Image (cartoon, rainbow, N blue to C red):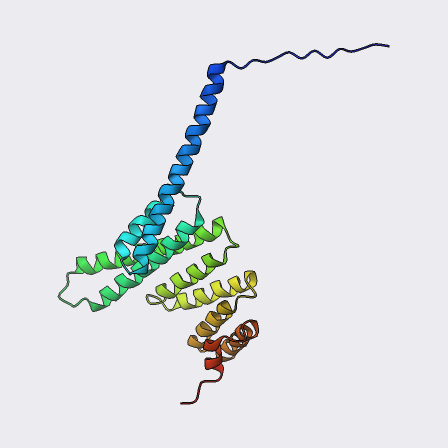
Length: 219
């Protein structure tokens, strides 16, 4: 019988290399944690400003969050909403400008409105491209599109499409169907609105807002 003896050759890694690898990994981890913390902080500051209608700092911090941690879809979603609000705000300001304002001022306002609108659409889509199964991203996108409908009513239909897509991912969310019903009603689609309201009520029988729409309380 032939006996084969296996020979193990020890491979020694110089201690200096091992230490270098450990230091590199530790630094990499620290940088990632630091970036994540900084991005979260900027996001929370941006959301806080957005909640009180302070759009300029909200845009600043939400943009910083998305740039600091570009792999996080939540930041793009929130930024898209803020930019939609900014676009709607600029649009409302443009409608109050008088004929005495210079053509340059009006042109700059329109340029800013368009930039906010396009950025809002891009960031809302970016969030969904990174995670298309997160229901809140669809809700925020629809909210942004409703802001944009102040500029162009066609965005109301886009908001409806967004919520209809969401309803396939969240078929048990009564509020989604309630909002679908509201938009359908605003678009003049009474029958479709009624279907949506009834679906919402079937999912949440104590949904008082829907009950009031289907059977308004007596005066």
